[in-house]
Image 1 (cartoon, rainbow, N blue to C red):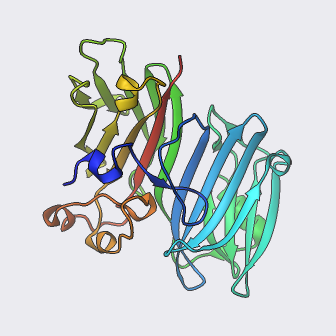
Image 2: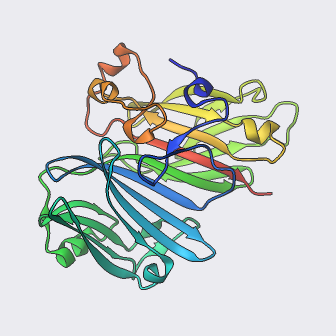
Length: 303
């Protein structure tokens, strides 16, 4: 397996940006945003729906972009702070003479410290009267509002990129298998111990990974088991330990791939198509639905 830095370049991880077919490097400044990518059937072919939640001084906003598998942008909707503050709405678009409706309702939404709603909301994408994608806990309301019928194929949540903040302990939540439970993920690093900083990763309060002598092991990878699935954890904390501007660390949690998904991989820098290579022996046991999810965390330390 390739090592972490060689896969992503000496300056760290590169990921696909929300805009069509663009690639950017690790962020230089903190951003309060969450990017979620779903794979679905749309207009008779596989497509990617990218949902970006953002929070800034101007307020909260939402972006929904639909791309084909060659990363050609088919359509994009931006719900800017002025529209977001109205809490509910819809937009209709036409793609290849086909109408696509996007509905949202945040009137009952509850938010945590991040830009993504925690509960009390829905976001729906409807095409030809079928519910292509419905996220949030108010899905029944989404079906009622849109008069949509369930799609013959379910959208699959395949990747999430998130910026998280803290001083020594950093936390988020993730669902590694499509029908599996939501887990609490905690990353702990005390880099103030100059002689021997240590890195800990916990899943649901259980320590699954410990890296000692971090100044010598500031980049690496390790395999853990979550819900019975092998999950590769990659880390790059070089900026925490050696950067003068004290930038962000990067962590990636990647479930094992099916061989079909691996052979269809387009670019190493595009997380939506799962860049990490695996051995054939690993792949042969990785054909269950829901595998191939990746979680990338940009972790910022607050002074």
